Image (cartoon, rainbow, N blue to C red; front, side):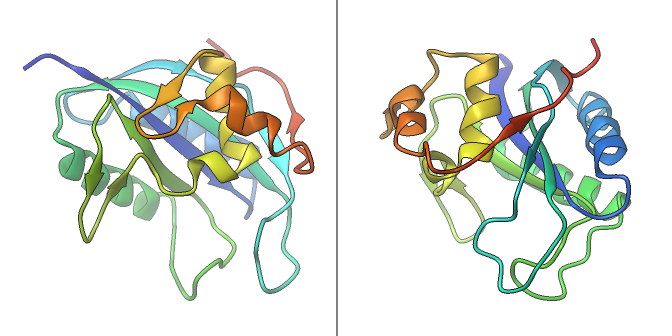
Length: 166
């Protein structure tokens, strides 16, 4: 099977979030039938849409090449979250690690467990900024050039931190 390029958003705001995101990026490259191709810099952002005050998030995006089918990749991402201590006490709770499958090649999918492209990727600067760092000309099925969406989110502050170590 030919590998598919997939993009995964990473975020954390509990504990040493920077160390967690860096370790999770490395762990993505150790998933079965998956290779880490590239990772963005780390970004600091304020929580979006949360009901209570929370610490800032550390975010990044990784590009992987995988032969896992999309639902199998999702299962691996959820298991990886669990290994990093992710619990889900309520929606928008602070997170030890959050992994979202943003894009899986050009696949458009809507199932009970997975929607691709990710349904909110074009509304979140903390996702678009690292995605566009990896590929400024990236397009998403049904959304077109993602740079046009980033321009619409100028009111969302995103602070770029140090680049991810190679």
